[in-house]
Length: 309
Picture 1: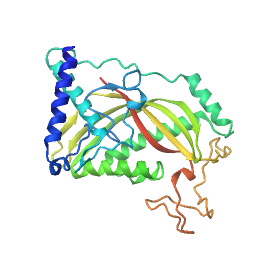
Picture 2 (picture 1 turned 180 degrees about the vertical axis):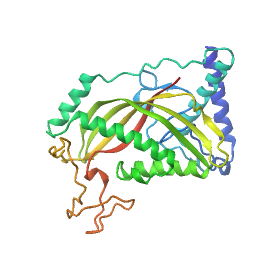
Picture 3 (picture 1 turned 90 degrees about the horizontal axis):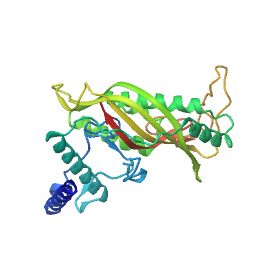
Picture 4 (picture 1 turned 120 degrees about the vertical axis):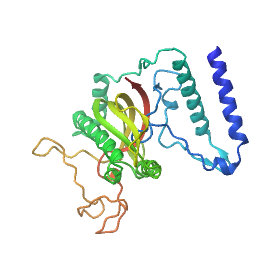
């Protein structure tokens, strides 16, 4: 009860402070957790949104707004404030003699049987779809994404995700660059990839995937090399829900000679070979080509759980 009361008092104090601040001050405020990992999902405190309380709807969807405008602050900012308060209270509790070990993660596990059943569901409309190829695709994409983030070269991700997600994550990366900070991602290991849900809408096939990875995540100053946040000696176990999409009606091509399905990167409008650039325009016919017209691409990310050891 005392813990809840302290949290309530701190939350009210922060809200009152922000309400009293001039709009010109709020307009310059930028909040994000550090250390970041690709997309600012990691943090200094562990979390687990899946088993209860927040639920899936309480996870940070990448489409949420984190900006503060001149007219006040948006609802997601309130959520961030609550998280900040919880982090502060947790740090104080550890400093007062409590255990500093990470709490056990109780995130629900997607069983192999369930993952296989989802793959069977996809194959009802796409006979050559395979669970193994999708799991390999997602594992490789996660690793490539973290390396692109750490090297601060986001362009290789252009053809691997939707335009909106690419642009949002690129803006966040530019924020790190503007601060002269580098988010280091090391010892990356994808531990498990499982198919969680498949559904279709008018425009896309949607495949939700539960991904668990182990990574060392810390941020350094670009010029001095000094540690800004995180700990290069500690590892994080991260759990995400990824949503992969592709255009409705697109099918997995038959396996080639190597046994894998080869995706042709030709313009779906004129058939010419194409390289997806940031403009996403076919240089032969001038048509705008989006990544989902070729293959499965990453559409959204939810940070589900983090445990630091």
